[in-house]
Length: 130
Image (cartoon, rainbow, N blue to C red):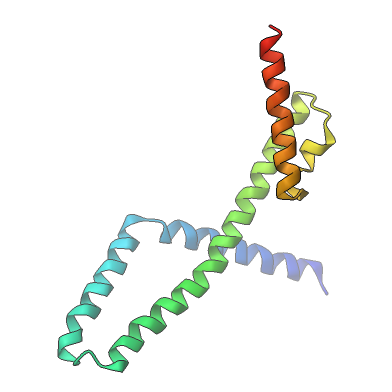
């Protein structure tokens, strides 16, 4: 497969996800969602609180939630990768050579907890020896 086409598609989705998450994070979008719910609720008595009336909101919210999961996950993945990159750069600048720290995101919860405890003990011992 053509790598330029693949990269262009990835770049398109990245741009789309970034813009979408920024737009949907604004307070006016929340206000618009509340307004839609108010209009929907107000139409309940007019439509006799029918099954179709309920189905409209259930279907709409399910679709929006389903799509937003992917947008949010993509944004979080990129933010996390950028944060790791920045932390690695800081660690290199400080000449930190502990390879376990560089690969910490690959570890399981128990190993991370063990390493955290070890770092806390080192910090406590260093502070106590001053």
